[in-house]
Length: 356
Image (spheres, rainbow, N blue to C red):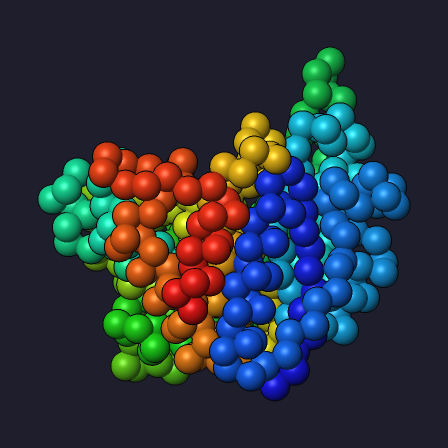
């Protein structure tokens, strides 16, 4: 099978971890008889430096004409003072909108070998952490109207958090379909005791739930959910929530697994084309030092194989290789613990490829 993959190498540590993910994909292609063709699509700080635009039209066209997109991490202090619309992060928002990617799936799963690295107590992590946050990605406050005006002698700013029924319906269906493949439990997170947008959210999710009688639906306010994720994460299977809440909760969930460097994510819309990326940032402080953790990037490639290319065996091979390397005690600096062997970014990639 031949697949065309758009590659966004990103900024700071981005090119380092992307190189290891591509190396793993090449190993998979060789083992299973596939051909993966890669086309660079500059975005973020790299694109600002080359084209003066965080997402040039040519890069978006490359992404739209590919079978899927692999994204590293964008941004860094070098571009902190550029105009708001030219910031690297704006390129990411425009890419999500341009590709119609309305659903972000971020797993929170702890590797048994990394339990000691979790900030949670052993009695909590021993119960297991294995849930998915389904976050609405192109609506809410991030994509609403933003205004700052002078009034009464001072500045006043507002950001509109709005949702339509169809936006809520489609993300709810993603959550219920995801739950059907897991433990068949959905927890919808909102702030329906305060916000009108959340009241519509809850009403719409309840209506969609009638189409899924085999899935158990519960509701939780976002502040309580934030507490429950650290108190008893084992209670969750699939969490579905709006954009702003999902951004915050998914970052919290990533930290309880032991290392933010190991968590992949996928952004999906209609069809099979998706955007796959690790959840961490560009880590400018360790860029070029061979210290970055490539596991999240590599597991993002595995998610791409599974969800966009229907290559379950190939995805399993990558995930099994990561498991094996961690069982052998190999770690990068972010999740290093006593008795383990610290590897650099390149060496960790090499170890994973060797198991494939």
